[in-house]
Structure formats: C-alpha cells, structure tokens
Image (cartoon, rainbow, N blue to C red; front, side, top):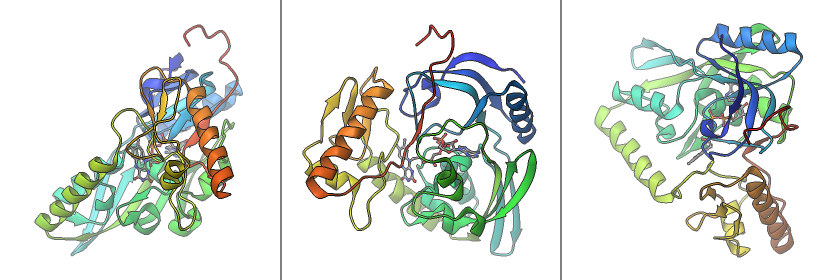
Length: 305
Ligand SMILES: Cc1cc2nc3c(=O)[nH]c(=O)nc-3n(C[C@H](O)[C@H](O)[C@H](O)COP(=O)(O)OP(=O)(O)OC[C@H]3O[C@@H](n4cnc5c(N)ncnc54)[C@H](O)[C@@H]3O)c2cc1C
C-alpha cells in the first residue's frame, strides 16, 4: 500500500475542484480498504472514501485525513434461465457495468446508462434516473463495518429519494473518523432482447446528453423538492447564468453549477448559498443539497493549494 502525501483531490472529482488530501491511497481490492482503515485508525486520522468523485464538493482546504479511492471492479454473474444476479465490486463504474451487462442481453440496470460514478457512490446516494434507481435494482450488498464484512439486504439501506442510511448517518458536511464502506453489491437482472435493450439505452444516452450542460459539473446540486424541480425554482429566481469567480449556474439547467475553469470550492459554496437564499425568499422552499460537501481544516504544511 502506497500512501501518497498531500495529493491534490481536484483531478479525482467531476467538478475538478478541491484542495489536497493529507494522505491518499488507491485501493484496488477489498482487502486494501481494510488495511487502509486500520492504518488510519492507528494514526488517529479521519477517513473519506471516494468513488468516482461525481457527487462531491471537496473544500479548498482539502481533507485533513486519509482519502481512500476505491477502484475494485470485478464482476460475477450467476444466471438461472432468464434471470440472473450480478455481484459487482463497489469501485466498478455504474454506467460501464450496465452497458457491459446489456451487451450480453441482461436488463435491469439499463437506466444507469451515462450515470457517472461507481457502484459504491450510487448505493450511498441511491442514485437514479430514467425510470430506475438503486433501491429498485439492488438485492443486497456487502460492507466493511468496524473491520468486519456485513451483508446488508436492500431493506437495511433505508433508501429514499437520493439518500440511504449511509448518507443520512453522515449528513451533508462530512469529515468523519470512519464510515461503513460498500465493498460489493448484488443486483437482480432479467433476460431481454439485445436490440430492444440497446435501443432503450441509446434513447437514454441521447436524452441525457441533450440535458447535461457542457463542462465540469457534479450533476444536480440540490434535490428536487416534493412536486417541483430545483432547476425550475432556481431559474424562476432569475439565477440562470449567475457567476461567482469561476463558477456559474448553468444556462442549460439551473440545478447544475459549472466550473468554467479555475473555480474554487468557495465560489461554488457561495452560489449554493445564493440559490438557497433566493429560492427561500421567492418561494418559501428550503432547497436541500444532493451533493456531498467534504470540508475539513487546512492540511498542515500544505503549500500546493
Ligand atoms: C454530469 C453528471 C450527471 C449526473 N446525473 C445523475 C443522475 O441522473 N442521477 C443521480 O442520481 N446522480 C447523478 N449524478 C451524481 C452522481 O453521478 C451520483 O451521485 C453517483 O452515484 C456518485 O457516485 P461516485 O462514485 O462518483 O461517488 P463519489 O462522488 O465519489 O462519492 C459520493 C458519496 O458516496 C460515498 N461513497 C463512494 N463510494 C463508497 C463506497 N464504496 N462505500 C461507501 N461510501 C461510498 C462517498 O464517501 C461520498 O460521500 C450526476 C453527476 C454528474 C457529474
């Protein structure tokens, strides 16, 4: 295990924003995660598990602890006639996994076409889109909890709109000493016609591309309030195109904030505050964050920010 020091985190995030990690390690196997967690505990430092970095805003000060980037991505398929169960390691890409299975004629995850990020990150936030989500596709998962592997059936996750028991326990702003880590997940699949499946995924891909602003973003910044859309509310508050520093509320979709180049975390946070204040003032609706904010004290001795 090679622990990097003061590793810049921005390149590991979809927003391309964030200061360095005091320590950083690539975990390519489940055992690496266990070793890294024990190492962090030994050194008395906080841990943050990073997947694809597509739903996090890392603070400008970075993370004063160990960031574990989980990349294990093995897949095992157990097929019984027209049904199957696939067990995927949590570092596997959601979209890539869905595509790979679809090419073999297995449906059930095709909604995830084009969804950035890993299986672990998707479970954490109950990712969903285009008629599907993790809650309705997952069978069970295996997590590392206090050094032991625990098997959680889907019910144990307490999934709700863009949240899970894991996310609810952490809250929006997290810099915590330890957290349960998803190691692998089992999804239910069924046989489908190859051409029909490919066509459905192509439709999703085209629609997704047409709606997604160009540039470095993290997807939806806020959750949609019941019966409404955060993008509509922010747009109706006159904030499309609002800019702070290098960050902009996207013209194409007001629930996206784009890093135009050189945006800092505090630029994005100020836009988040602005959107929240305006929507509250105009519509009396308190927007709730979908993205995870990872903030901690400046990394000691850091000169590379
Ligand atoms: C252009 C764009 C479009 C998007 N569209 C959608 C969409 O349509 N629907 C949707 O739901 N989301 C969407 N997102 C958000 C994002 O893709 C999802 O939230 C994704 O599931 C995050 O996965 P990740 O691996 O990148 O997680 P990260 O951003 O790396 O981490 C997110 C959280 O998950 C935790 N985590 C990561 N891996 C593990 C693990 N193995 N065990 C425990 N915790 C873990 C992290 O600690 C962190 O708290 C979009 C993002 C982008 C950039």
